[in-house]
Length: 93
Image: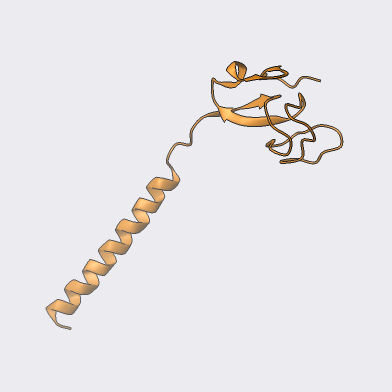
């Protein structure tokens, strides 16, 4: 093996290792904090728990259903205003 071939293999291996390390770092990046906010989802846009007659995400039958929640940025739920009142951190109804 000549020196150029060895250097090329070493460079390729180093790039591969760096790429794997970068992917691992991004995977462990902190996700933004969210909270369940009840009563703020539009029909069909809830994240889950839409009450009787529904199964899960995207099944709210009406806008601002009190028994359906949506993930929102942490600390913002109770400040969200809807035509049916503010968002709630606890299930209503």
